[in-house]
Image: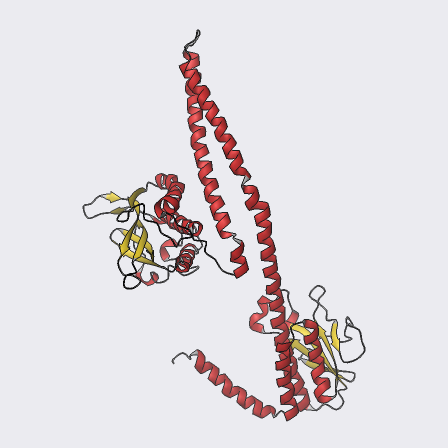
Amino acid sequence: MLQMTSLEHILERIEAKKADYEAYNFTYAESTAFKTFFDLAQEYDYFEDFYSLCVAIPKGFFGLEARLYVIDPAVGDFPMVASTGEEKPGLRPPFAPPQDGHAYYSDSLVLSIKGKKILLDQLPFQARDNVLGLLEIHPASGLDAHKELFFEKFANRIGFNIHNRFIVEKNIEHLKFIRSLVSDIEHNIIVPNMVYKLYLRNLKGLISKNLDIEKRFAEYEGVGKDEELSAMIQEMSEINHYLTAELGNLEKHYSNMSLFLETLLRRSHFDKGRLTLRTKPCRMKEDVVQPQLERYASQFRDMGITVADRFSGIPEGDIITVVDVGLMAQVYANLFSNAVKYTEEVTDGSGQKKKYISYGRQIIRDYFGPGMDGIKYNVFSTGPHIKPEDRDKVYEDGFRGANAKSRPGTGHGLAFIKNIIELHGGMAGYEATPLGNNFYFILHK
């Protein structure tokens, strides 16, 4: 049996609804009441106005009094929020939610107001039996089965609207929180992070003084210079060498973390609800690739991975203009991080064992159209090819191929890369090449 398409399913549901409404046989007043409710529900933005609309429809069309009770998530009961009478909001109902969706209490018809089952997990609270509120209609003495059915359908429509409004309110609060959080991060993390630059400068000054003292000791030819002093000088030299190397590592780490913090926690991302670009002229190898390669150099060495630089074919003076340095740096950070995890030893055609990565670039003439060249950047690593059935999925968020199941990761890195490259107007891809896997992206020249 062929799977039904979305359009076919909807057309089938339309036919079913047409049959339902023929069976309901709603009167002109009842049909108009529904239309009026739908129109005005879109007109009123505030909860108070919407709640008043819910009780006004029974009053305005059928001369019936009504009370609306809506869940209070904090305590789980249903205070009254609107009434056609003189009662003040906050009154608790003298009845429990009906087990079957509707019930009679004294001279009132009480109906449960339920939300959308498919969206229950998006509510900012838990609703028992999916009940979001209660609608009380009175007097009920003159209501027949037909009118009861009408009010059941009316209560359902109230429920769907309330559910949507709860979700919208939750999302608005969520956005307010995110914007506040960004301000907090900027104030409490990004700005104080600049203090580390001062610490590093002071440490560099102290190491410089230490090196000068070492030099003076080494040149000192005074009385009493002996083997013990020479050993001390040697020890000081080794310590200074170690401190200088560690200072360099700290400076690199600080520069990268500062760049990544500033880039990912940019206020414009949160204001617009998407990643935004801050482009500037840069030299890709010098400003983007090399700092990330230096970050991962020790990891490559520890894993026995050699690195081949194939950044040829384009003069170093050539400047790429449409690049967000911070985001593009994270593209390479993800590619190098993956290379550390997945590069494996292979045997080439001559029988030699090889385990390496390479990175490079090349011009592709007219890639984006006549006279619009592209530049292909890539990171290659040796190892088994990704399975053919997985190759079209590698850039999907959360996807992890069969070869990745035993490796740490979330499957988000390549999806992030694809997003960033497409923001730059380019495209990202994968190709299986001799000896391994090549991940690449192409940008406008």
